[in-house]
Image (tube, rainbow, N blue to C red; front, top):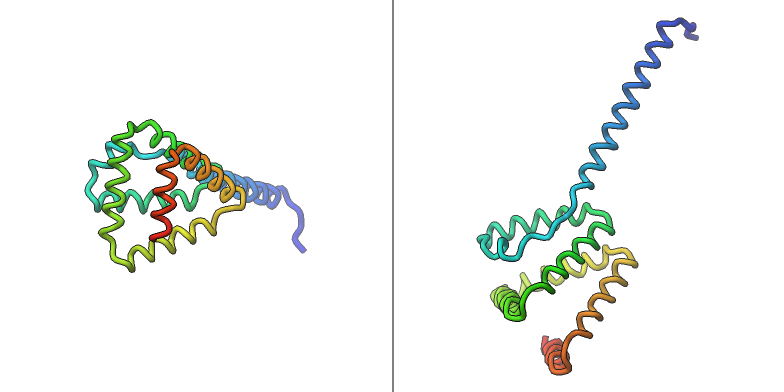
Amino acid sequence: MQTFTPLTAVGRLAFRRRAWLAGLLLVVVGTTAHAAPLSVPDAQDWARLTPQQQAQRKAELRQRLEQATPQERQAFRQQLRQQIETLTPSERQALIDRARERWQQLSPEERQRLAQERRAQVQAMTPEERRELLRQRREMLDKLSPAERRALREKLRTD
């Protein structure tokens, strides 16, 4: 059994203080990693990037989104949606056309892989996130004209 001396008490206190500071440092570093908000890249800046740069930035964003909290992911999606809504109809159509062209250039295996990735992302969402995604999709569909809805329905049947 160890005897109590002022020196052992000071040593224990110093050890506890160092441990407490190390724990505090971990908390501060951990919270600052989450404190940096996920910002949506500017659409025009994104369009200027090469496909390789876009792929790299997309991978970085995807990784940050995976590490983000559900609230941060929701804020990111909302910011992205708002940015898309501010585009003019012709800019939106150009964005749709480019996405469709890139999709059609993919091999069937690559399309399948991307579909599986998206499926995994949706399955990884919390029930609340899935409900919010469904609500947003319904809201988007409500904004379509009957002709656009019919065209989308027809397209989904052929895919």
